[in-house]
Length: 232
Image (cartoon, rainbow, N blue to C red; front, side, top):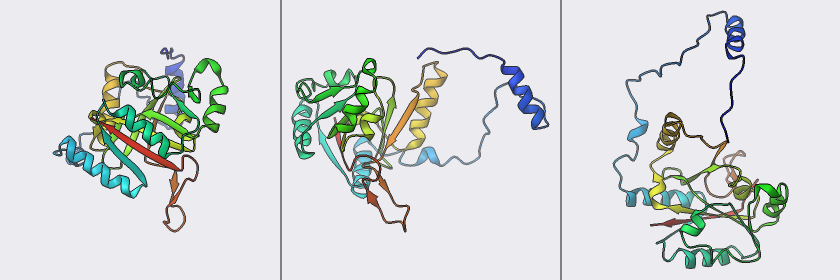
């Protein structure tokens, strides 16, 4: 997505400042320096293997199966997990990692739909009717067993939301301690002038809610089952 231009910025800010009864602030605000910042220290000393164990323990709480494999065995493990989820139609994003990780053979079936922005709402129909959605995690939070997906026109959030079940492929190097590190990564992308995604989707297992008396109900408004495959 190309960056646009800002028009009438000063007039807009002047109007806001006037209504707030203060002078407009036209320079960037400095971030307050806090004396105590405990959040970056949580799990900061853990190794990749230890972070994975934290994530595994959390997966038990969010009803998500976590599998481990290496890249050579990934196609076989993914094919088996597709069977565990009942086979059927599959929807995937246009993501070069499926080829990089050797999954093009597994996902070359007729009932696999690859998201194509040029096909418009037809993609939504495929996602609604699909049994399985499969996506790669861009950042993975060990503390909450959360996959962070940078959505764009080729990696629509519908792929992880509309199918009956969801499989996330997690490169082991993408695992960080918690949300703190994910925010830092995105912040650095902004500082580097990169175009950040229009939507950052955070998925912690299957759809669930505990709004009523803190009783967890799974499969409320999205996939009713989820699996994570961690690839070393």
